[in-house]
Image 1 (tube, helix red, strand yellow):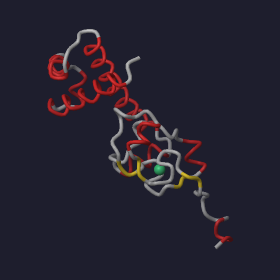
Image 2 (spheres, helix red, strand yellow):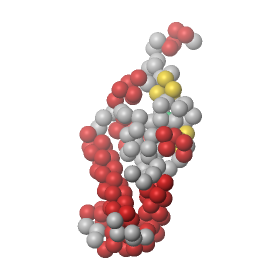
Image 3 (cartoon, helix red, strand yellow):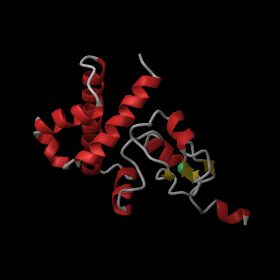
Image 4 (tube, helix red, strand yellow):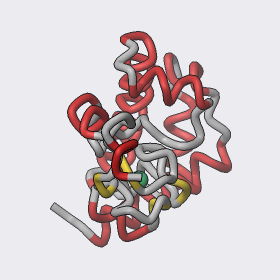
Length: 155
Ligand SMILES: [Zn+2]
C-alpha cells in the first residue's frame, strides 16, 4: 500500500478542529472560542474523517466560523476552494451574529435588561435583521446563552 500513498493527496494530518475525532464536541467549541457560534456535531473542516490535507490547512483557517456542517455540501466545497461569493456570504452571517452578541451584551450589562426585553427591543428595531428572519422564541433562547456566557466570563 505504501506505493499508492505517493499518488494520493496527503491527508494524514490530524484535524486540528476536532482533534481527529471527526466530531466537534463542547470541549472543542470551548477550545476554539465558538461557544455562541457552533453547536456540537460532525466536523465540517475534515468532513468528519478526522484527517485533513496540508492544502486545506493552508487555505482555510481551522476556526473559520461559518464553515459548519449544516451548510449544503456544495457550499462547504466552495468555502474550502476559496469561492469569493461563498466566503462573503459566510462573513456577512458571522458579522450579523457578532453584532447581535454585542447588542445583547450591551443591553444586559449597561441597561440591566433580561433576555425577553432585549429580544422585544431587538425585534422592534429590526431593519436588515429581517434578512435572517429571526424567530422570537429562538432569539430568546440564544440571548439566554449569550447572557450565561457573559456572566461566566465577565471582561
Ligand atoms: Zn475535524
